[in-house]
Amino acid sequence: MPLLSKNIPELYQFNPKRLIVFLLFAFALVASWRLCGSQCCTFKHDHSLQISMWNRLDLSAFRFFNRWLLTREHHTFIARVFVALNSAVIGELITNITLILVTCVIFSSNSVLPNRPRSFKISVLLAMIIYGMLGQMLLSKLSRDYLCPKRPSPSVVFRFSTVNPEKQAISSTSETFSINRLFEEAKKRDLVKEIAHDSWPGEHAAVNLIWSLFLSSIINRSSSALPRIKRLSMHSTVWLVSLLFSIARLVSGAHWFSDCFAGGLSEALVIVALGIYTPIFQLCVKLIHSLIDRSQSNGKKLL
Image (tube, rainbow, N blue to C red; front, side, top):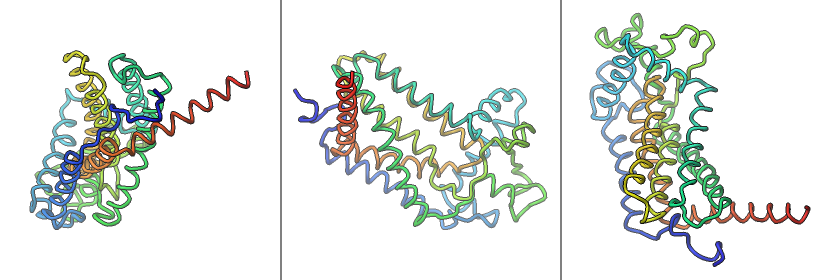
């Protein structure tokens, strides 16, 4: 059975109803965020953060992650972990290597993508990276240009607040805590990414969610014989890693909660739904796999 001549059920199943549901849910997230907060892109006054559901969620999440979590003395170790995850170089390396390693461990199971050669599994991994990144970059560009350009991140809003600039906070009762103030060394070297003047949408969260949705879909479709406990452990690992790296951006004040949830999740839903309920992702895998096979055959000829 030639690989390129038939559909690959783990990667593509025609289901227009689910496709429509995914797209409608993504649209509802963005529409509710846009319509429920007229001040969503600019924060000039204290009360502007209190006028909508999303703004209340944004402020509550910032206070929890950036103020409550990191200002407790016994949470210093947690703070150090998030400093590492938010560093400009080390954080990116940790994130990317972890995502690739988790994917490789899951693909190494005989029950995931069963009876597929290693070259095919490598093709799926590369397709997830290429298709996911291209789709995320395109949607983020459109969303940033037409929905909410130049949205300041929490760190910018609180640091340069026009309401109470002396305390660098929106009000005297909501003191801010910036992650790089915890460690002077990180502040001196400017290692921590916390400032963003275009924080909508949350691109890191979108990439993490695209990865986790793709992997969860492949795990579910790969084998009905996969034990329930093993399937649950795979899903749990994937989503815990995804949430950890996404929350890191909230802790540093680089994104609002709605940037990650409404923005990042909506992008992930659109990209993954178009990938697994239409032939797009499967075609990407087939193209990459054919290139790998061709290079391998050419290498054998040269030998």
